[in-house]
Image (cartoon, rainbow, N blue to C red):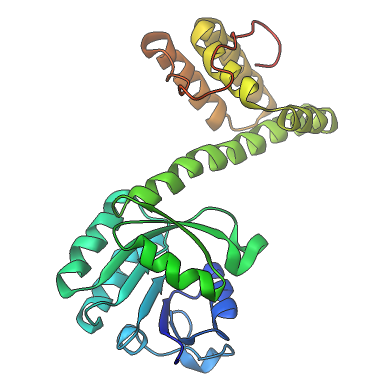
Length: 280
């Protein structure tokens, strides 16, 4: 049986990994306006336009930037065949994923919202992907035999994107906090000590710790606002930008009026008390 024809839209970091992994498994066309066909070194080669890439394709996988996802879908629209599986794996807002589905479904395309849930350079073609929408199972059925790891979650386009971006709020926020706090520690001459403290805190984190963070913020929000105002003054004195520290202060101040979100019913540590003092 002939392998499926796959169009890959986007040849950045994710596109390179997918092209390298899929190139020997499928018939592959790749289009990215930043990469002319003459720069091709991959199996199947780069093509010179969106139409050339997607025309006649069984599967289209869009891994453009989020800002370009709607443009890629719009450019693909006139050239898609009924039944073409169009999986958008860009990091876009849920509303953008829904608009892509609304745009492409009238021509018979089967639209899937895909969300890459881990750094793809570390895990390659097998990086976990969540897929939502009524055709998510079909995408998973294509992906598995070709080396991809796709978990269908049903629902609608946008549901996978929401999970991805909630993860981004957490992980990218943690990244920004590490940057700001480590920079302040270096400015205070405490970089080595703080790095050890940071690792100790992260390595010891479990569900009980997270529940303490949440409930403790509700129980001691006023005191913690004052604590973070003092931290902001310290960073200012050190000459370190305090963007995340000020945002933390604002969030805790809001908690004094709104409280904190509930711990999910399934939490094993739902009854853990907030802890006064210490590092939380």
